[in-house]
Length: 223
Image (tube, rainbow, N blue to C red):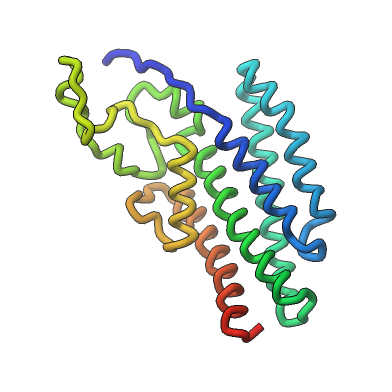
C-alpha cells in the first residue's frame, strides 16, 4: 500500500471555536457565570498563546495538553452555569429576558464545546487522523467513509460524486455533527460507533434538551 500523503488539517477553526465559546459565555448574566463574565474569556485567551506557539513549533504533545485543559475549563463552566440557571428559575433571580439570553448563550456554547471534544478525541485527534496509514478508526461513520474510491483517478479524471479514499473528518464535520445533536437530538446522517461517543452525544442531547425546555417554558409564559 502506498504511503499516505500527510495533509495537515488547519487548526484555526478549533481555536476560533474555543474563543467563540468563551466569548458566548461572557454574554451570561453575572450571577449565572462562574466568577466574572470576562474571566473565562481571559483564561482561554491566555492559554491560546502557548497553544499557538507550541503548534507552530510542532510540540504537539504540549498543544494537546493545553487544548484539553482549555476545553475542560469551558465544559465545567458551561455545566455550572446551566446548574445556576435551572436553580434560579423557580426563585426568579433573573428577569425573563436575562434567562432567555443565558439559555441561548449556553445552547451555542454546548454545540461548540462538544464539537471540540469530538474533534479532539476521535481517532486520536487531528494528529492521529493525519498520520493514519489506512482507514482511520473513527468513533463516527461519516457518509464520505462509505463512498467508493474514484475509478478515473489514474486517468486524471475526477467524478464529483466520488470522494477521496483518504478523506478524513475536519473540525467543520464535527461541528455539523454537534449542531445536529443539539437540534435534532440525533447525529442524522452519521452513525455513532464507539461507546464513549454515544455517552458524549447523550450528555450533549440532555444539556440541549434542558436548555430548549427553558426557552419553551418562557415562550408559553410559565416561568
